[in-house]
Amino acid sequence: MMFRYALRLRLCRHLARPPSSFVPHLAYTPSSPVQSATSVRLIRYQAYDDAFDQDELAEARQWRQSFQPSSLPKGQTTFARSSGPGGQHVNKTETKAITTWPISQLTPLLPKIMHSHLRASKYYTTQKDCLSFQAQDSRSRTANSEENVKKLWEEISRIYEEAVPSETSPEKRQKYAQLRKSATEARLKDKKMMGSKKASRKGRPE
Image (cartoon, rainbow, N blue to C red; front, top):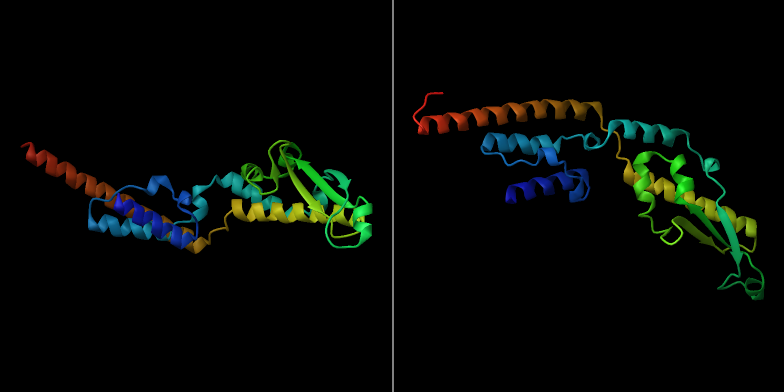
């Protein structure tokens, strides 16, 4: 148990990711020092994006290259009286813009890998199942509405950075493939030795 935790910790430090990014199929406990060392090196050189669906990653990266703020839908904007500094004009005119984008309107435009992150956004409103933004810095309705669109774009860009890992270099992928092969060979060798020991205890030759 302690060894597994140590592997998780080393992986997280190397990738600068929380423990949830640990890849389960590597979380076995080696029964020999050689296998243990190989496993640690394997995790160290692991390609982080190997834990994701490669088709979804390709879709997301292609989307990022072509998607622009102008591609965003207009959303639904209402206006209210502003508050805070700005003189009497602030309290007498309805220039505060409140713009909402239903999740159902955004998901068709975004890669699948980003969908679940929309409802985890700090701008998500549960009752209306939407992202909601407010702007009131300007005395212009148009300017405040445009500011909300800018905020939505910034939030979508943040979600992309959070959901989609950076592409692993070819050199690291090659190193990982070599180490994974070594780890598999060490595991099979160790398994064979354990089987031989059990057979000898039972008085049967291998």
